[in-house]
Length: 411
Picture 1: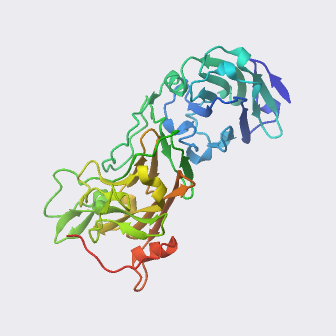
Picture 2: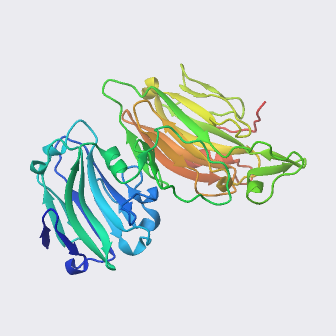
Picture 3: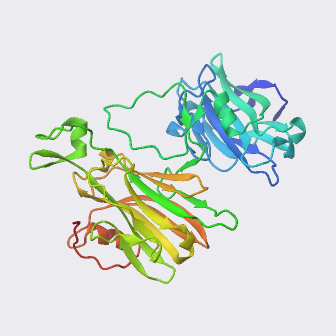
């Protein structure tokens, strides 16, 4: 094993490393909370493609070239990086009131078993709140490692700015308008440092309440592609736009995408809140869940909202958030649907309806009360019903709610 000192560099081949290997940041932070990140930079040292920033809110780079496998470890596969990524920079940032001077004996380790290590500690720093610890970079056709150990007075946002990126506003972005092809990545990336994306089915996140506080007013927002202004009246669009509209009487009709939920309270009562059947729920009394309205075309920029009264979260056992296509072509891939869960004082949680299907019902996320802590799990599972069993009933049976279903409609 090679022990690097600050500023020392060496070829990975000389360390016996190539292709796939772990990079572990063993940081002794005590009571200080540390977030680790990996920035994939271009030849100019800039974050020109924000998909190659891997951190707590985005745990995988494209093609799993870099994966955050735990709170302090990455798996790197250099063979999967595109030619546009010239350097991987490994960083750490304080996410509370602490600073790097409080660190104990720490190190970055390459490989398993360890092939190289670079040690550092709080005695190397002052009041810095972020560090560039080490980097993997291309030089003369080969990959090398450099021990950096550089501090920043700012936190993760300062690192992001240093690499040419910028922090996005911590609000849910509106659903994108349909476009025939994705736009190229901007030169200045926009990264949300206060948004959690649940990427894969089964991914979970627990959101702790602030001491002595409640979860407050929880907003569950569903947004999707909007009907473009000036859509033709006599014929539905063709091509990509044709996916977004159903032919009804020879006219283009927008998708009516509805949000709803099944709920189970702590006293054992169960039911549904949804526009179908005019079951709007209630915010100030049981079930403490209220559906705000019904956007029948996606033309309301704010989408549809469910509100959960987090003051009474102790009365709620679980909530299954779902959506179904009431009218329009059942093509989820065309909707670009996304659910955002917002809780005061917490990072927002995003769940994309990204597993395309032509079935009309999608179970999106489960909100569970785990001993007073709100846990969000990504589901994104589709249902179409079978025989006399409706899609609602099939979803109900899948998640063991045990409700009695009958045909309903919206006024």
